[in-house]
Image (cartoon, rainbow, N blue to C red; front, side):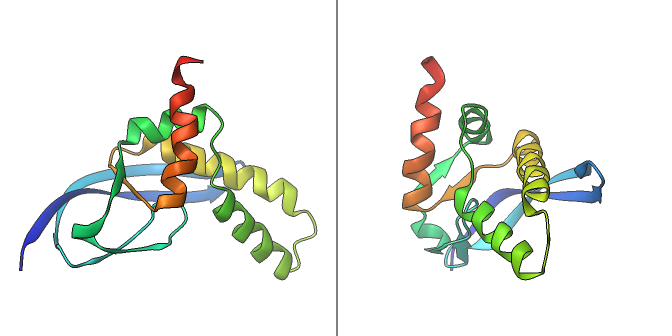
Length: 132
């Protein structure tokens, strides 16, 4: 069984009135089995085994895409539906905080992102807007 070293990060966060505040980021190398299951870092769709991941993007590319307008639509929709199911009366206000918090996490990310085919294709449009 082959072990793969991958960079990973742990975030210590708190939820304040102004959204998610990142208190600390810890970088480390993790050893994982090449057959360990992997999920898309944007939509959480299962990608299969680590050795089979086809699309990896640098944290810089993800940051560029987000600054060019990319939004994690599936994650936002799922969060909004959860808030509505819990009886939240003003989900739109909370959703602004959720998106801003997610953008903050993206800006501070220093590790590669594993992406499913759909997220990879959708994010490429925004990465390529670099020259526009």
